[in-house]
Image 1 (cartoon, rainbow, N blue to C red):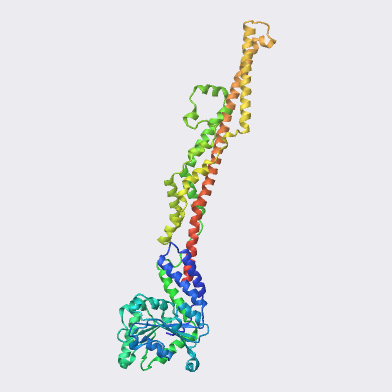
Image 2 (cartoon, rainbow, N blue to C red):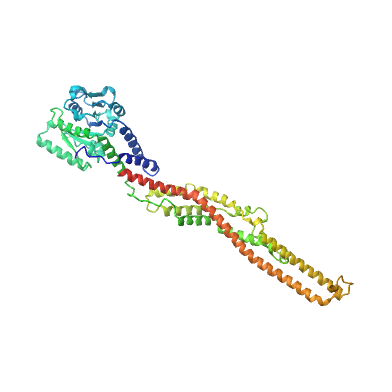
Length: 541
């Protein structure tokens, strides 16, 4: 393994995609993961805008590992207290090779001014390869102070490169490996393991310890562990450690590699239960729209309303185009409108429709659920629930909105078609002709048969004309009846047309309401799903 491995291209693009994952994953992804992603974005944004010419290397380790002694050996100065005076490091110390541009970075790391040191002047001769290094000596992660102070954890998260300092006695400490080392699996390019105090081991013992440590790290997911044996006391291995650090510093890539490693690990967790790529059609197809409209029309009883209007249309036409004598005879029969409980159709017709349209909530809910279930097949359960929630987000308004919308439909039954006027005039002309025939018949009988006096006209006294008058009257009755039958047929056709018009109008309104209250929220959720997966895959790779 080499620290200078090239970082993956497109870190900025991946971070932008991660921001979209956080935005679109609200309510669909574990809130803790989203919070971690948010913190990563904040940390990445802060780190990338600070000095790219400096590499932050954190020396981390437990009490007694010799971490501070190693820090002093690498820096060449007695900067961090060691030994009896202070057996544990209380606050982070920083040694900087090249101060230009380092101050904002140190401020972000929250390193106190009195604990900042610089390598300058002649002391740096021969160490120009470390120019740009910010070396941190972290507080001991297992000290009493660490129980109440998370400074070590914070800087382990923020550092570009982590150097774990282990000692021969506790290099396999379970707590350290479980809490820290295992969490850095996949960070091979930005993690170095130092087996310090190697002077206490024979060459054979050192080789055994190094091999055992590498095997242990491999089991914990560190595929290619970089292990360096050192002795802060004798200086053994210090140059080798400096070479590793110099390689990272000169490459100026550790910060990018650390962020990418953090991003890789986070995305594995975010995408754990997500398919690699499951694209869904973001628009509801015409067949499903029609199915939803049909179901909602059934829920509001559109067909029943259309049938009622058709019946009312036919009954009302009798007043206009029916044979008057038959209608007058019907006055002695029960009113069919009253039997339908429709009231006076000459009143506001909207009362009829408004009272007839009542959307059934259960049927509406079934129609909405059928749509969402069909569209979300194959999606992860949490996203299926999201589609259902989107479909139902406004479905509670559906019954009332449908009732109100359809209640506004006013069939033009209060408007008389022109041909009804013509039919009525024609029928009353026939009634007048028949009445005139009756009058002429009476006068012929009176003047011709009973010699009631002098007729106004010779024809009115001629009994021979009577058969022709009677024939005329029969013909008038026949024409009237034929006219009534023909008109009735036309009325049936017109009533069917009116029913079709009303049902089309109702269906159009139902479709509009369904589009606004159901389809659009569902399509937004489907598009959100596609956008989320596109962002997820961009952030992963």
